Image (cartoon, rainbow, N blue to C red):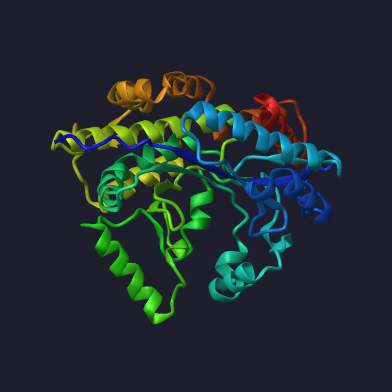
Length: 377
């Protein structure tokens, strides 16, 4: 007997950095600005760990089109209130030239506890990410889909990479963010779990010992949400452009449905050891879309444009059912334009070739990020 199909609802969380519109340096969010944001956007906006960060979260959305309208409203609202203080939000996972040593965390119990527990590691957390939730009501299905979806996490990272610079230097990486985040405990690729009960037992073991309070302190690249009946993809760098966020959300949602569809036919995606998946994760972190990823079925490194076409073909019927074909196919446009890391590097190199000093070229990158944030609003 066929099981009732889940709705595959989605929710998107994004973290932004606040910059001065003249100096392009990071600025702590003024208290009144946060109050204004909260008054308009209510519980869909909140402070993040650092005072120069702000986080938004969409409502539970039936489809990507609904997510677009909510995300556009949230991005526009943050921008409007920031502008009153000559500030602007940017949606990149690392600021091109800011120093983490100059930033201060928000004085809240949760963040004070993080500072105490994680010490010097958390001080470097001058990074921003995006999280995509996909609704799956059955807990065991969440675990089963999560095990299989892990294969595609490097593909999502490569397509989302937006953090090539760190403290004024080109790191040579497409996503430097992960080198910072991976220093925290309970991060990285999720383990392969046999069931929801195994996940609960593992979490309970740490909670009972007093190491963590609950599963919200598990920061894997993909996890069962601690608050919602969803799987939460956390691998992606945050996207400067709203439409690129929606493209990634559509891909994650469609992959989830594809794996659920296989399950209904007693089929599944082949599971690979994390040792192998981690190699692709590193390739995505280092090269973005330019270096290709290992196709373990073929046993060779495959160019990313070919991998993307394979993924689009794999989930095209799912995107059609979910009403997100346009957003899914926009992934080809990202490849044409280059991912966010590529676009930032291009701006920097153009400025250097125009004989601008390095510090001015880095400011041009921030100016570019401000423009991209507002491009789709």
